[in-house]
Amino acid sequence: MIRSMTGFGDASAQIDGVHYHVEVRSLNNKSFTATISLPEHQQALEAPIDAVLRRTLNRGTITFTAAVADTSASAAMEVNHEALSRYIEQVLAAPAMSANAASRERVSIDAANLLSLPGVLRPPSDESDRLKKAVTVLEDLAGKACEKLVAMREREGEALLVDLLGERDAIVERLGEIREKAPAVVLAYETRLRERIDALLTEAGVALQPVDVIREIASYAERTDIAEEISRLGGHMEQFAQLLSAKDLKPIGRTLDFLAQEMLREANTIASKSPDSEISKRTVEIKGSIDRIKEQVQNVE
Image (cartoon, rainbow, N blue to C red; front, side, top):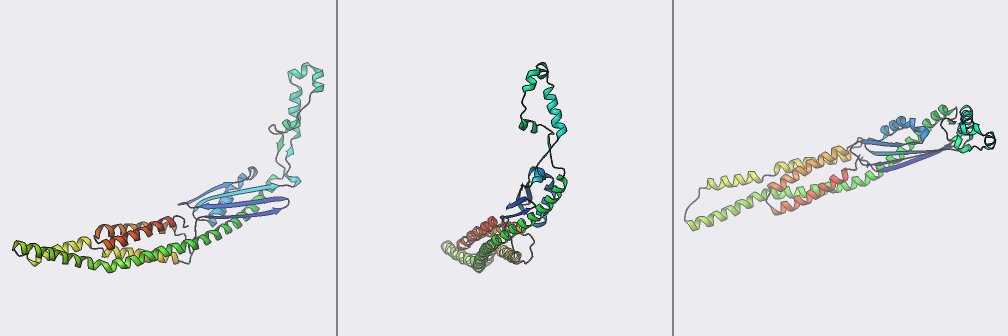
């Protein structure tokens, strides 16, 4: 079973007047990279959320986003009355205020501006308990969102599997045609060589030793022998099929990518060694399928 690295999952819950919503998105990447976005007062939860993601997802660029909306009365910030009083005292004690008692009596103070001063508002006294509850809820929701994301990855993986097997079958078919055609290439060369030699010798009136012809044919056969490359490419195709048919959930994307590079290496060697036009045509088709495989396995986990 193979999985795509592209997916999306979300989950939400309403608990004690607090609404939690999380989203997880993933794109292809050679390794695991997570970007976690949490509300300001839940920044300390990044490490446990990262651990949840790593337990479920092996590769990909992961983006996790959480939104927490607390509509309960306990969400209100507490006013630090000591700090607020001190600010007011300092305002009233300013030189301009002290010099004119009448102005001091008429002064008005903007409450909104006072509340925005450092230290006037502070988190609720039960902030630690609220954070503990939030981490439990968000870890649970992250797990559920990841389950949805994995399910989507598996659905996309099924489509990838069909495409990859189709390309693999096309390569095996073309490789079989090359395997059948390869022995005839040397025989055709031998026939052409003997015909040219016979024609030239007849005109020149001289004779050529058979051993010389045999030596030339043997040299040509060695230069154009692609049996080893055909065998190795065939072995790669068998391994490719085995990886795709594996029943475990072990990530195989990197292995498939490396295997595709080895396939292309053998196909290039076949193309460079064989002078036959039909074999060249089949090799071009094989290389096209391998290129499509290379593109597709980039998104396999």
